[in-house]
Length: 321
Image (cartoon, rainbow, N blue to C red):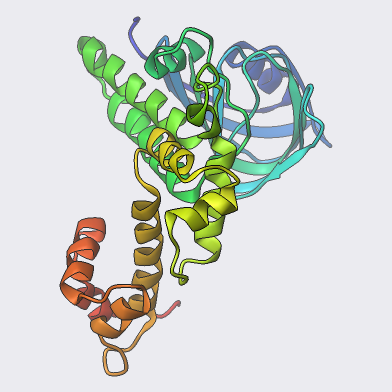
C-alpha cells in the first residue's frame, strides 16, 4: 500500500472542475446554469480508501461512468436530486443527514447536486469481499443503510479513518494501522447495508436476509412501546424467529431484543432530557419504557450513554438564541 495522499482543489471554473472530478473519480460530464462553478475539494487517500470533503457553490448536473469502487456519500448541506443508477428503475433524492451509497461499482449513474456540502468515501470492493470472507464480489443491494443505528456506526468509522488515520502526517510509517482501519471501515459497510454476502447460504441462513432485517427494524421503531417478542418480529419480517435472530446477528452484530432495548433507551433519554426534575422521576420514565427494575435501567443507560439517567434529567439545555 502506497503512502496516503493529501490534495486540495479550489476553483470557480466549470471546465477545470469537470477535469478534476473526472481524474479523481471516473470520467464524467457536469453542467451548471452559469459559467461560474465555485468548488472546493479536499482529499486524503491510500490505495484502498479515499475520503473527500466537497463544497459546491452551484447546482451541478452529473453523468458519471462506473467508479469501480464502493462510493459512500454523507450530506451536510444542500441536496442531491434525480439520482438514477443504470438498471435501477427508481430515482432517488437525498438531503442533509443522509448517508448513502451512490451506485454499484460497475454501474454508471446520473443526477443533480444542488449547492451541496458533503463528504465522499470510496473503498476498494476487494477489501469488502475479503472482510466478508466470501469468494464472489460483495454487492450493496440498496442506496440506504438498514437502520439509523447502523448508519451512525458507519459514519463514526468513516470519521475515524478520514480524520485519525488517513490525515495523520506519519501514517505512511504505519501500514498495519492503515490496513486495519480500512478493514474496520469495510466491516462497518457490511453491517450497514443489505449485501449479497450471504447469497450462497441456504435454508434459515438465506431467510436471514437484509430485507427481513429492515422489516423487523421498521416494526420495532414503529412500536417501541409495545410488549414485543421475537415471534412478533418474525411475523412482521415474514420469516422465522430463528432467521430474525440470525439477521440481527450477522448484519448488526446484536440481537433483536438488544436492538429493541436500545431503541427504548433512546426514547427514554429523549424524555428525560425534555422533562422537568420536579415533574418526573427516573423510575417513572424507566417503567414507561419497560423496565420494572430501576437498577437495570440505570445500568443499561450508563453503558449506552456514559452517564446516569438522573444526570440527564437534571441537565439544563440552553434555550436557542
